[in-house]
Image (cartoon, rainbow, N blue to C red; front, side):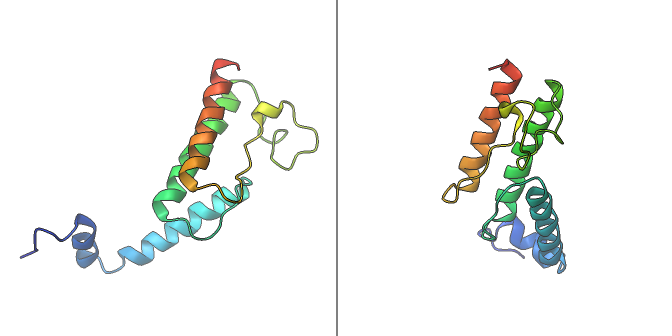
Length: 115
């Protein structure tokens, strides 16, 4: 019988020995998606942090699309963006994943409000 202090995640790992490999695979995929969208990563982000940042980036992209922006023109590497507000914010070198995700969400809210 499991000890009460054993976490849910620990019990799941015991039931599925491939769980950690699946988590690494998903984390690698999410990291590649973020990097393809211009987000700088340190390689130290946890799977939860990567998902948090991807969620924020997807919300930002949805706000840009709803406002009529084109992600191709407003790419972070674009030399002539349609609107600076439509460009995904760059992650600062010392910015935590949570802080970056929150800043991207604030930018998305600003687009939605027309700020």
